[in-house]
Length: 145
Image 1 (cartoon, rainbow, N blue to C red):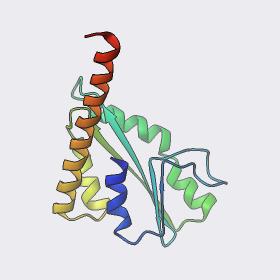
Image 2 (image 1 turned 90 degrees about the vertical axis):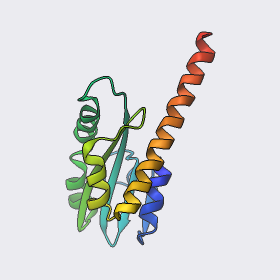
Image 3 (image 1 turned 180 degrees about the vertical axis):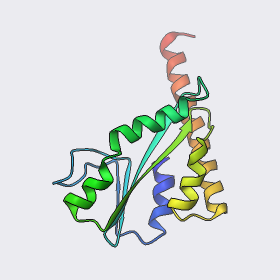
């Protein structure tokens, strides 16, 4: 799923795309899912895949990511000298249900068109369901079901 998001960012002329890499010193030793840098402006993207056992599970997953990475934009500006930094949290449920804010985040913050947003969400849903199926298959094999 990270590759799908990164491909949309790389098409926008980003100087540096860091997928699942530690941030450079003097920044905190964190490994965001994606850090995209363009003209000294940083966009940090965190993806969360959550169970959908309750109506608030997706929002809870987003809150956990915000609690862990919410301070990062300020630190990137202060310690790395970035002109601007933003944190985007994208949440998709394990069966492909998207968090309400995900579509809005994709279109507004990433600068994607409506068609690009729809395509990326479809890709995320497809990959999420594929991943959930793989986990289920391993579980069945290990448990003898």
